[in-house]
Length: 174
Image 1: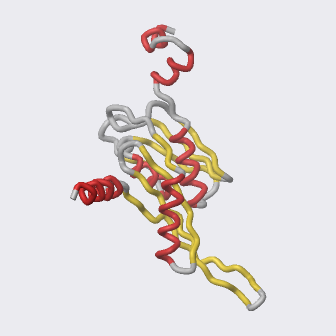
Image 2: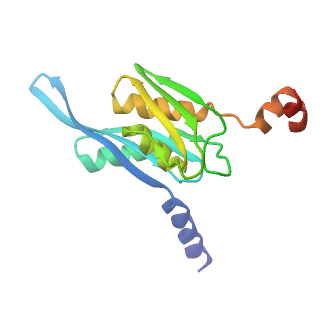
Image 3: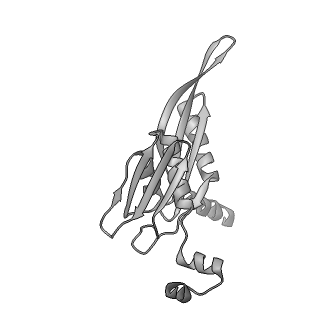
C-alpha cells in the first residue's frame, strides 16, 4: 500500500513538467537502397518555476521523436533565477550557432515580449515580464538553445557576493 502511494507521488512530481513541441521536421538519410525518412522534433520542457531545457529527438515516427526530445530536454535542464516580479535579474545575451538572443528585464504587467522558440523557452521557464529579441539566424533550434544559454548565464546579487566573498550590503555600497 505504501509503495503504491510512493509511485503516485513520483507521477505527480513528473506531471508538473510541461512540454511544448517547437518544430517537427521530416529529414532523410541517403542509404544504398534510396532515402530513409525519419522525423526530428525540437522540444522545450519546463516547470514554470525556474527550470527549463531544450531537447532534440529523432525517430522513424513523430511520437517516438517527441519522446526522445522530451528525454533529451530533461537532461539539459538549466536553473533560472527569477525576481519577485517573475522577471530576470539583469540584461543578458546568449549565442548558439548563428543565432543571438538579447534579453532585458521588464516591469510587472509587461508580459513576455518575444517571438518564436525564445517565447516558448521563457514561458516554460516561468518568466512573465521580459523583453527579448532574436538576432541573426531564424533557426528555431539555435534560437531556443541561445535563449537557454542566456538564462543559464544569469546571476543574482547573492551569487556575485558569494563569488567575491563579501556581503550583499557591501556589494550595494560599491
